[in-house]
Image 1 (cartoon, rainbow, N blue to C red):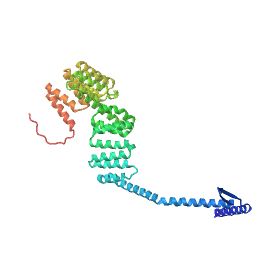
Image 2 (cartoon, rainbow, N blue to C red):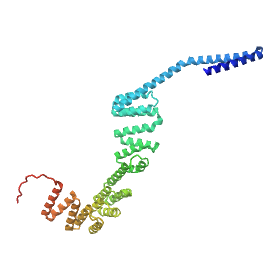
Image 3 (tube, rainbow, N blue to C red):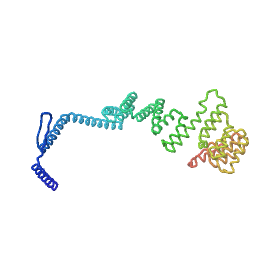
Image 4 (cartoon, helix red, strand yellow):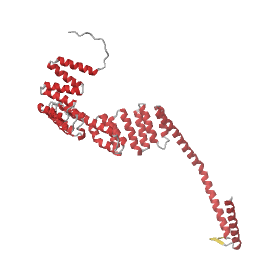
Length: 414
């Protein structure tokens, strides 16, 4: 109210002042163009200019208003199309999450034609088509996504790679992923899928080369990465002989196996499973003496009871020296069941039957394992010590089932 009063007061003052000015000096304006002249006062000219401006403004609004209905219709149609697209997208995504593949594909495909982000709809529709077994339709939908949104090639390519992997199309999937890796070398999804494809293709060499990048980009956690590295080198070690030609001699086999072993990182060369597999392969090709040297070196650098047990399975170049090496470990490891088992086996290689029995019994006492029991039983039977073998069997049965109930038994017969 106060603002209105102030405004009216200012308006009255300004009007009074302007009226006073018009009375005192109306001014004079002469406009001449060729033979035409117009004479008027300054205030009348100003009034005409104000009226002309208002009339022009009104005409412009009138012209713009004549075009407005068409624009309004177009805007309304656009908003309506977007609402329909959003509703169908929502219905399609709900159907996709519920496993209603046909309905999902239908709604998502229809919504893509009106969507601002058609690639998302087409990729989801491709997944629905894949679930129905329509691989051709899925690929066609992904192609439409590429045509609609070329800049989303990595996302579309990843969707296609996943579908190819699900179908078992490993070679096309691999080619697709290699192309995507060139475009997005640090994309963790690309690297993860690439790792899965290499595993299924059993391409362990390529996977070994990929391991550093998987580690740098934190694609897998430490435990999973270590397990994968272990699997790669184990499988690569096993493939070292199968990739050779059929007429490869023992020397060529030994060289191939040695190359694979040297390619294994140092920290994994102490892994008992890898060492065990390596020595087993060396035994298969008749290179037990070379395997014994490798094991001896590893045990000296890092004590591992599983490596010690592997050492007892090998027939080294000098059986006596091999036994002496193992005896030397007893000073630092007097109560090791695996070492006693190894000493028993090496004693048998040197025909020291009594020592072998003592070592087997000591090993069985420390850890009653089945393989120790079997070794001792076999030796006793071959030595003709049937009563001792029977007593050992009875002891073993007592260990296996110590809590048998008291039941009637038949009388012993001579």
